[in-house]
Image (cartoon, rainbow over all chains, first blue to last red; front, side, top):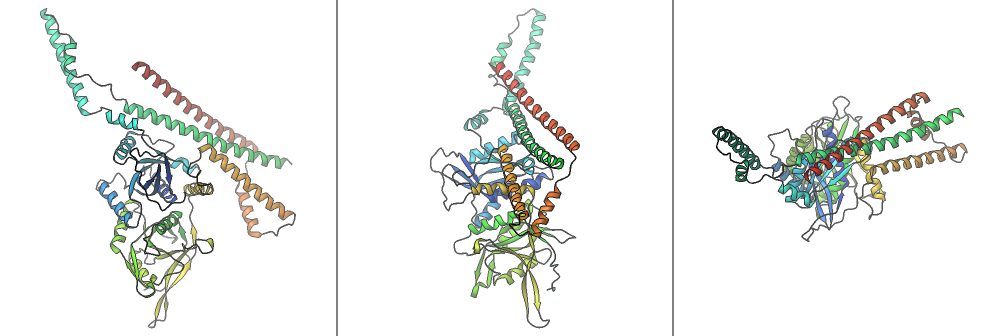
Length: 256
Length: 288
């Protein structure tokens, strides 16, 4: 889009956060092609972004598609490395700066997106995810958005204790409680004092609040989806009014 | 070598992405190489013989010999890249090769022989792009090689020009129009994508300007200030007749239904949002 300078610089300061993403025309055209080709068979298109970081600006200068996820025989890591090595020989920027994905009227948010972006951002800090909306763009509104996880989101994801271990503790605790209830029933029938449930609960460390991650993502997803639809509707309304005024002009002429 | 079984009438459609890729490859060429060349990929429509050039990649190479008439192409690189390209777009096949320069180079014959074997149809196309910007234009031409000469005597290859069109799918147009507008902005403001409703406003302004232009042209002709041009007249006629004639009653009806649908979707989406906010508040209340 903008002129490319000959500079090739990496950010040196430690808090190398970026605040601006600049996308080359070539990368845009490649994403457009890939996303539209995949969306015609109702598939999600995904690919890698290549580029470089200059000051606080992330420049996306090239990209390449990932193979379709249905193909199990492919080693995706190998494929990516091979493509990047080949492109490097013809002097394409080989810094992997993120990835892109297609979406339909803003239905892009998902757990998978969060997970991938988390892994990208923890391994390469400047990574972004670019979401390209095929449906909206096909109707005339270029919709290309770059997202990043905030440091808080990364921290939350890291702390989110949604591991099998937590599940197991929960299961053991329930089993012990059930056993205790049975024992207590026997004790009451014999007239002995019952053991309080608290005794058992103390044996297990307190459970964290059940993870809200999925629910949050779903609600975020619905929120953006409806927002996109609302935007799209207002755009369509604007178009509709343009048609109306054209029609009115025509009718006025006919009456004359 | 078969003599000109190539259908010179076949249409060639060039996707703009290919142009972008060649320019990018040229800008990133190695210091000691004055030009880039590479493989063109595309789709050949079976019956009509229409060739769409949809993709390409550049290939590492070196020119040598007098007048650079010999070429060393990194064949392994070419094959590797082809394999990788096939993974992403299995339907695209080799249709020819591209290079940059002012004229067909002396090495074209060798390249033609190589791509003749690679190419499915056996008739590789040659895309030549003049990146020196002579006359402020980027001249892009497509050639196909035709065998010439006397049977039993000297034989040669003649690269003859093929007609070419640039293909514009609607998403490509949307993206390119956007980029064109970005380029016109001063560099400091460039880059920010417009909020989406403004895109409609922009498009409306565009229509207005174009209507003004057309009106001025027509008035000039009516006032005999300008010489009428038949092709422009026909094009205008086509444009005007492409607007469907809708009766006032039917238009009203269509307009109202569409309007109701859109307003309904708007209401529903804002209702969903309200519901979400409500549930968020409720769950926060439980926590507190």
